[in-house]
Length: 154
Image 1: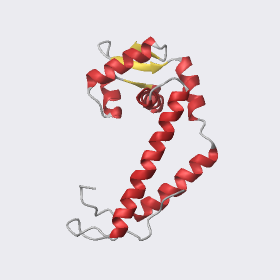
Image 2: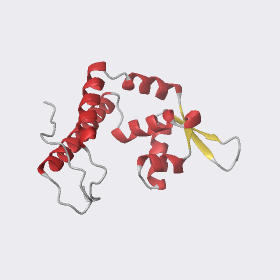
Image 3: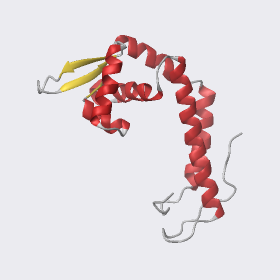
Image 4: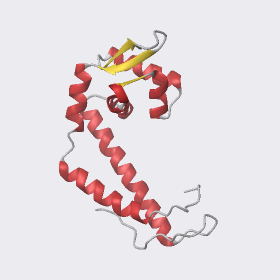
């Protein structure tokens, strides 16, 4: 069952108290984010990947030139460079990534998906249309209620 806030959020100054509608909207927003993350984790598991591995493959595939450095991957995953490096090592061992020397700077290494990873990611990304429509409708309704003046603590 889709949860939607009962009241629209107020556009009050950041130091004003949140209304019941504000709390309902924030709770609904976080609920939808958690639902999406759970959906993604389940999809990743069905393809023998962790959610983080799936996110790494998706970030690389979506990148300009379809390559990322370890540092750029780290930024995309909100992780430390050494963690992104270890993750890329595991993906290389699974034959899902290759490391390539950058054309413009031989000191830099770029991460690129293998054909196996591209095929797996394409199958994982084929989300049923009704799920995408439901998520879009739900998140659109919630985002329409979010105020740009929310305090940073939300």
